[in-house]
Image (cartoon, rainbow over all chains, first blue to last red; front, side, top):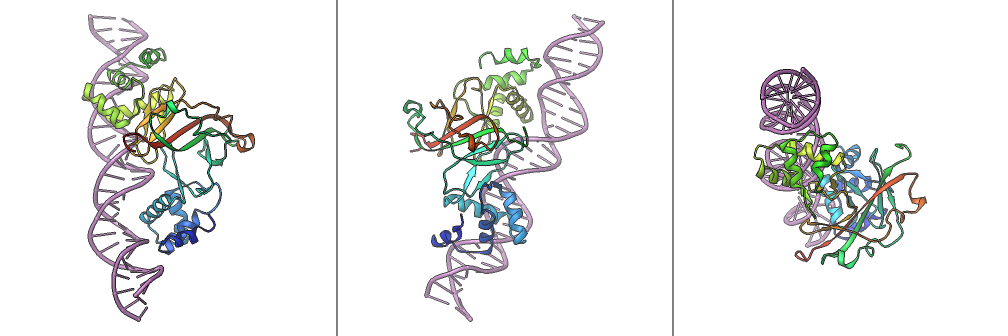
Length: 136
Length: 136
DNA sequence: TCTTGACTTGGACGAAGTCCATCGTAGGAT
DNA sequence: ATCCTACGATGGACTTCGTCCAAGTCAAGA
Protein backbone atom coordinates (compact mmCIF):
# COMPACT_ATOMS: atom_id res chain seq x y z
CA UNK A 1 0.00 0.00 0.00
CA UNK A 2 2.82 2.35 0.88
CA UNK A 3 3.55 3.44 -2.68
CA UNK A 4 -0.05 3.46 -3.76
CA UNK A 5 0.05 7.14 -4.65
CA UNK A 6 3.07 6.58 -6.87
CA UNK A 7 1.44 3.66 -8.64
CA UNK A 8 -1.73 5.61 -9.24
CA UNK A 9 0.16 8.58 -10.64
CA UNK A 10 1.99 6.17 -12.92
CA UNK A 11 -1.35 5.03 -14.30
CA UNK A 12 -2.30 8.57 -15.22
CA UNK A 13 -4.47 9.27 -12.23
CA UNK A 14 -5.00 12.97 -11.74
CA UNK A 15 -3.83 13.56 -8.19
CA UNK A 16 -6.28 15.62 -6.15
CA UNK A 17 -6.29 16.36 -2.45
CA UNK A 18 -9.47 14.31 -2.06
CA UNK A 19 -8.00 11.21 -3.68
CA UNK A 20 -4.81 11.60 -1.70
CA UNK A 21 -6.73 11.73 1.57
CA UNK A 22 -8.85 8.68 0.72
CA UNK A 23 -5.73 6.72 -0.20
CA UNK A 24 -4.04 7.75 3.04
CA UNK A 25 -7.04 6.73 5.13
CA UNK A 26 -6.86 3.26 3.57
CA UNK A 27 -3.23 2.77 4.53
CA UNK A 28 -2.29 0.02 6.96
CA UNK A 29 -2.86 -3.64 7.80
CA UNK A 30 -6.13 -5.22 8.85
CA UNK A 31 -7.99 -2.13 7.65
CA UNK A 32 -11.55 -3.00 6.61
CA UNK A 33 -13.52 0.22 6.64
CA UNK A 34 -16.99 0.90 5.32
CA UNK A 35 -17.43 3.74 2.83
CA UNK A 36 -18.96 5.84 5.59
CA UNK A 37 -16.02 5.24 7.89
CA UNK A 38 -13.65 6.21 5.10
CA UNK A 39 -15.65 9.38 4.58
CA UNK A 40 -15.61 10.17 8.29
CA UNK A 41 -11.85 9.78 8.55
CA UNK A 42 -11.19 11.59 5.30
CA UNK A 43 -13.38 14.49 6.44
CA UNK A 44 -11.29 14.80 9.58
CA UNK A 45 -8.42 15.90 7.35
CA UNK A 46 -10.37 17.52 4.54
CA UNK A 47 -13.73 18.67 5.87
CA UNK A 48 -15.29 19.60 2.53
CA UNK A 49 -14.87 16.16 0.97
CA UNK A 50 -18.18 14.79 -0.24
CA UNK A 51 -19.65 11.35 0.11
CA UNK A 52 -19.95 11.07 -3.66
CA UNK A 53 -16.21 11.58 -4.07
CA UNK A 54 -15.42 8.93 -1.50
CA UNK A 55 -17.68 6.46 -3.31
CA UNK A 56 -16.19 7.42 -6.68
CA UNK A 57 -12.65 7.04 -5.44
CA UNK A 58 -13.26 3.72 -3.71
CA UNK A 59 -14.92 2.42 -6.87
CA UNK A 60 -11.94 3.45 -8.97
CA UNK A 61 -9.49 1.85 -6.55
CA UNK A 62 -11.48 -1.37 -6.78
CA UNK A 63 -11.45 -1.31 -10.58
CA UNK A 64 -7.71 -0.65 -10.56
CA UNK A 65 -7.27 -3.68 -8.32
CA UNK A 66 -5.72 -1.67 -5.51
CA UNK A 67 -8.52 -2.28 -3.04
CA UNK A 68 -10.88 -5.23 -2.54
CA UNK A 69 -14.54 -5.16 -1.66
CA UNK A 70 -15.32 -7.53 1.18
CA UNK A 71 -18.70 -9.26 1.00
CA UNK A 72 -20.88 -8.80 4.01
CA UNK A 73 -24.25 -10.27 4.85
CA UNK A 74 -26.63 -7.38 5.11
CA UNK A 75 -24.18 -4.79 6.30
CA UNK A 76 -22.40 -2.08 4.32
CA UNK A 77 -19.55 -3.12 2.02
CA UNK A 78 -16.07 -2.97 3.51
CA UNK A 79 -12.95 -1.97 1.62
CA UNK A 80 -9.68 -3.83 2.07
CA UNK A 81 -6.48 -2.10 0.88
CA UNK A 82 -4.45 -5.30 1.26
CA UNK A 83 -5.18 -6.31 -2.34
CA UNK A 84 -1.58 -7.03 -3.35
CA UNK A 85 -1.26 -9.79 -0.75
CA UNK A 86 -3.72 -12.61 -1.47
CA UNK A 87 -5.59 -13.52 1.68
CA UNK A 88 -8.91 -14.53 3.16
CA UNK A 89 -11.02 -13.23 6.04
CA UNK A 90 -11.87 -14.27 9.57
CA UNK A 91 -15.00 -12.51 10.80
CA UNK A 92 -16.33 -12.34 14.35
CA UNK A 93 -20.00 -13.30 14.41
CA UNK A 94 -20.41 -11.14 17.48
CA UNK A 95 -18.87 -7.75 16.80
CA UNK A 96 -18.12 -7.98 13.08
CA UNK A 97 -14.36 -7.52 13.44
CA UNK A 98 -12.44 -8.68 10.37
CA UNK A 99 -8.88 -10.13 10.32
CA UNK A 100 -6.84 -11.09 7.30
CA UNK A 101 -5.77 -14.74 7.31
CA UNK A 102 -3.76 -17.03 5.06
CA UNK A 103 -5.10 -20.58 4.86
CA UNK A 104 -2.87 -23.32 3.44
CA UNK A 105 -4.14 -25.55 0.64
CA UNK A 106 -5.54 -24.90 -2.79
CA UNK A 107 -9.19 -23.94 -2.52
CA UNK A 108 -9.77 -23.55 -6.26
CA UNK A 109 -8.20 -26.94 -6.90
CA UNK A 110 -10.55 -28.43 -4.32
CA UNK A 111 -13.52 -27.80 -6.60
CA UNK A 112 -13.87 -30.89 -8.82
CA UNK A 113 -14.27 -30.44 -12.54
CA UNK A 114 -17.75 -31.94 -12.56
CA UNK A 115 -18.82 -29.41 -9.95
CA UNK A 116 -17.85 -26.44 -12.11
CA UNK A 117 -20.83 -26.55 -14.46
CA UNK A 118 -18.72 -25.15 -17.28
CA UNK A 119 -17.79 -22.02 -15.35
CA UNK A 120 -14.33 -20.50 -15.85
CA UNK A 121 -13.49 -20.22 -12.15
CA UNK A 122 -11.15 -17.31 -11.61
CA UNK A 123 -11.09 -16.64 -7.90
CA UNK A 124 -12.24 -17.94 -4.58
CA UNK A 125 -13.26 -16.04 -1.51
CA UNK A 126 -13.23 -17.76 1.86
CA UNK A 127 -14.83 -16.36 4.99
CA UNK A 128 -14.18 -18.07 8.32
CA UNK A 129 -16.77 -17.26 10.97
CA UNK A 130 -16.50 -17.57 14.71
CA UNK A 131 -16.34 -15.66 17.96
CA UNK A 132 -13.32 -13.52 18.77
CA UNK A 133 -11.72 -13.77 22.23
CA UNK A 134 -13.57 -10.65 23.34
CA UNK A 135 -17.00 -11.93 22.32
CA UNK A 136 -16.57 -15.56 23.44
CA UNK B 1 -36.90 -29.16 2.32
CA UNK B 2 -39.85 -31.38 1.55
CA UNK B 3 -41.02 -31.70 5.12
CA UNK B 4 -40.23 -28.16 6.07
CA UNK B 5 -43.82 -27.38 6.96
CA UNK B 6 -43.96 -30.39 9.29
CA UNK B 7 -40.72 -29.43 11.02
CA UNK B 8 -41.89 -25.86 11.48
CA UNK B 9 -45.21 -26.95 12.94
CA UNK B 10 -43.28 -29.22 15.28
CA UNK B 11 -41.40 -26.20 16.56
CA UNK B 12 -44.60 -24.42 17.44
CA UNK B 13 -44.77 -22.24 14.38
CA UNK B 14 -48.25 -20.90 13.85
CA UNK B 15 -49.11 -21.98 10.33
CA UNK B 16 -50.59 -19.20 8.22
CA UNK B 17 -51.33 -19.14 4.53
CA UNK B 18 -48.59 -16.54 4.05
CA UNK B 19 -45.92 -18.63 5.73
CA UNK B 20 -47.03 -21.71 3.85
CA UNK B 21 -46.73 -19.92 0.52
CA UNK B 22 -43.27 -18.54 1.32
CA UNK B 23 -42.06 -21.97 2.36
CA UNK B 24 -43.47 -23.51 -0.82
CA UNK B 25 -41.80 -20.90 -3.02
CA UNK B 26 -38.46 -21.82 -1.45
CA UNK B 27 -38.83 -25.49 -2.28
CA UNK B 28 -36.38 -27.12 -4.68
CA UNK B 29 -32.69 -27.43 -5.53
CA UNK B 30 -30.44 -24.63 -6.72
CA UNK B 31 -32.99 -22.09 -5.56
CA UNK B 32 -31.32 -18.79 -4.62
CA UNK B 33 -33.98 -16.12 -4.72
CA UNK B 34 -33.83 -12.55 -3.51
CA UNK B 35 -36.48 -11.37 -1.06
CA UNK B 36 -38.18 -9.51 -3.87
CA UNK B 37 -38.28 -12.58 -6.09
CA UNK B 38 -39.76 -14.57 -3.22
CA UNK B 39 -42.37 -11.86 -2.78
CA UNK B 40 -43.18 -11.86 -6.48
CA UNK B 41 -43.67 -15.62 -6.61
CA UNK B 42 -45.57 -15.73 -3.36
CA UNK B 43 -47.87 -12.96 -4.58
CA UNK B 44 -48.69 -15.05 -7.65
CA UNK B 45 -50.41 -17.48 -5.33
CA UNK B 46 -51.54 -15.13 -2.59
CA UNK B 47 -51.87 -11.64 -4.06
CA UNK B 48 -52.38 -9.78 -0.78
CA UNK B 49 -49.12 -10.94 0.82
CA UNK B 50 -47.01 -8.00 1.91
CA UNK B 51 -43.32 -7.38 1.53
CA UNK B 52 -42.96 -7.03 5.28
CA UNK B 53 -44.35 -10.51 5.83
CA UNK B 54 -41.97 -12.00 3.31
CA UNK B 55 -39.04 -10.30 5.05
CA UNK B 56 -40.28 -11.42 8.46
CA UNK B 57 -40.77 -15.00 7.35
CA UNK B 58 -37.41 -15.22 5.61
CA UNK B 59 -35.74 -13.81 8.71
CA UNK B 60 -37.44 -16.41 10.91
CA UNK B 61 -36.45 -19.24 8.59
CA UNK B 62 -32.85 -18.05 8.75
CA UNK B 63 -32.92 -17.94 12.56
CA UNK B 64 -34.43 -21.43 12.64
CA UNK B 65 -31.58 -22.63 10.43
CA UNK B 66 -33.90 -23.77 7.66
CA UNK B 67 -32.66 -21.26 5.12
CA UNK B 68 -29.24 -19.67 4.56
CA UNK B 69 -28.47 -16.11 3.58
CA UNK B 70 -25.98 -15.98 0.73
CA UNK B 71 -23.49 -13.10 0.86
CA UNK B 72 -23.44 -10.91 -2.18
CA UNK B 73 -21.25 -7.98 -3.11
CA UNK B 74 -23.50 -5.00 -3.59
CA UNK B 75 -26.59 -6.91 -4.71
CA UNK B 76 -29.63 -7.96 -2.71
CA UNK B 77 -29.29 -10.89 -0.30
CA UNK B 78 -30.27 -14.29 -1.66
CA UNK B 79 -31.97 -17.04 0.33
CA UNK B 80 -30.90 -20.65 -0.01
CA UNK B 81 -33.30 -23.34 1.26
CA UNK B 82 -30.66 -26.05 0.95
CA UNK B 83 -29.50 -25.49 4.53
CA UNK B 84 -29.57 -29.14 5.61
CA UNK B 85 -27.00 -30.14 3.01
CA UNK B 86 -23.65 -28.42 3.66
CA UNK B 87 -22.37 -26.85 0.48
CA UNK B 88 -20.63 -23.83 -1.01
CA UNK B 89 -21.44 -21.47 -3.87
CA UNK B 90 -20.27 -20.83 -7.40
CA UNK B 91 -21.32 -17.38 -8.58
CA UNK B 92 -21.23 -15.98 -12.10
CA UNK B 93 -19.49 -12.60 -12.15
CA UNK B 94 -21.56 -11.70 -15.18
CA UNK B 95 -25.18 -12.46 -14.46
CA UNK B 96 -25.10 -13.30 -10.75
CA UNK B 97 -26.37 -16.87 -11.16
CA UNK B 98 -25.62 -19.07 -8.16
CA UNK B 99 -24.98 -22.83 -8.16
CA UNK B 100 -24.49 -25.08 -5.15
CA UNK B 101 -21.15 -26.90 -5.20
CA UNK B 102 -19.34 -29.39 -2.96
CA UNK B 103 -15.57 -28.85 -2.84
CA UNK B 104 -13.39 -31.64 -1.48
CA UNK B 105 -10.87 -30.94 1.28
CA UNK B 106 -11.13 -29.47 4.75
CA UNK B 107 -11.28 -25.71 4.53
CA UNK B 108 -11.51 -25.10 8.28
CA UNK B 109 -8.54 -27.40 8.88
CA UNK B 110 -6.60 -25.39 6.30
CA UNK B 111 -6.54 -22.39 8.62
CA UNK B 112 -3.42 -22.76 10.79
CA UNK B 113 -3.73 -22.32 14.52
CA UNK B 114 -1.49 -19.25 14.54
CA UNK B 115 -3.78 -17.60 12.00
CA UNK B 116 -6.87 -17.93 14.19
CA UNK B 117 -6.09 -15.07 16.56
CA UNK B 118 -7.86 -16.88 19.39
CA UNK B 119 -11.16 -17.06 17.49
CA UNK B 120 -13.39 -20.12 17.96
CA UNK B 121 -13.88 -20.82 14.26
CA UNK B 122 -17.25 -22.47 13.73
CA UNK B 123 -17.94 -22.33 10.03
CA UNK B 124 -16.46 -21.45 6.70
CA UNK B 125 -18.13 -19.99 3.67
CA UNK B 126 -16.50 -20.37 0.27
CA UNK B 127 -17.54 -18.46 -2.83
CA UNK B 128 -16.06 -19.42 -6.18
CA UNK B 129 -16.31 -16.69 -8.79
CA UNK B 130 -16.10 -16.95 -12.53
CA UNK B 131 -18.04 -16.64 -15.76
CA UNK B 132 -20.79 -19.10 -16.56
CA UNK B 133 -20.94 -20.66 -20.06
CA UNK B 134 -23.62 -18.20 -21.10
CA UNK B 135 -21.60 -15.13 -20.07
CA UNK B 136 -18.17 -16.31 -21.25
C1' DT C 1 -0.30 31.67 -17.52
C1' DC C 2 -3.93 29.69 -20.01
C1' DT C 3 -6.96 26.09 -21.26
C1' DT C 4 -9.50 22.14 -20.90
C1' DG C 5 -11.26 18.01 -19.69
C1' DA C 6 -11.18 15.35 -15.68
C1' DC C 7 -12.66 15.76 -10.90
C1' DT C 8 -15.66 17.34 -7.06
C1' DT C 9 -19.86 18.78 -5.05
C1' DG C 10 -24.38 18.36 -2.83
C1' DG C 11 -28.78 17.28 -3.40
C1' DA C 12 -32.14 14.39 -5.56
C1' DC C 13 -33.02 9.88 -6.45
C1' DG C 14 -33.38 4.73 -6.02
C1' DA C 15 -33.02 0.05 -4.11
C1' DA C 16 -33.08 -2.87 -0.19
C1' DG C 17 -34.60 -3.49 4.12
C1' DT C 18 -36.71 -2.20 8.89
C1' DC C 19 -40.20 -0.39 11.99
C1' DC C 20 -44.63 0.38 13.86
C1' DA C 21 -49.55 1.01 14.90
C1' DT C 22 -53.42 -1.36 13.65
C1' DC C 23 -56.11 -5.13 12.08
C1' DG C 24 -56.85 -10.14 11.35
C1' DT C 25 -56.80 -14.93 12.54
C1' DA C 26 -54.86 -19.75 14.14
C1' DG C 27 -55.58 -22.66 17.33
C1' DG C 28 -56.19 -23.62 22.30
C1' DA C 29 -59.89 -23.05 25.84
C1' DT C 30 -64.71 -23.61 26.95
C1' DA D 1 -69.08 -25.09 17.57
C1' DT D 2 -67.81 -20.73 19.35
C1' DC D 3 -65.04 -17.58 21.77
C1' DC D 4 -60.56 -15.38 23.08
C1' DT D 5 -56.32 -13.73 22.69
C1' DA D 6 -51.72 -13.54 21.62
C1' DC D 7 -49.19 -14.06 17.60
C1' DG D 8 -48.92 -12.83 12.86
C1' DA D 9 -50.02 -9.77 8.70
C1' DT D 10 -50.45 -5.34 6.71
C1' DG D 11 -48.87 -1.17 4.34
C1' DG D 12 -46.91 2.97 4.63
C1' DA D 13 -43.31 5.72 6.68
C1' DC D 14 -38.66 5.58 7.54
C1' DT D 15 -33.56 4.33 7.40
C1' DT D 16 -29.42 2.93 5.27
C1' DC D 17 -26.46 2.37 1.59
C1' DG D 18 -25.37 3.71 -2.65
C1' DT D 19 -25.88 6.10 -7.50
C1' DC D 20 -26.73 9.92 -10.62
C1' DC D 21 -26.45 14.46 -12.43
C1' DA D 22 -25.80 19.39 -13.63
C1' DA D 23 -22.88 22.89 -12.36
C1' DG D 24 -18.68 24.54 -10.51
C1' DT D 25 -13.50 23.73 -9.69
C1' DC D 26 -8.83 22.67 -10.52
C1' DA D 27 -4.46 19.63 -12.01
C1' DA D 28 -1.36 19.52 -15.21
C1' DG D 29 0.09 19.83 -20.04
C1' DA D 30 0.79 23.45 -23.87
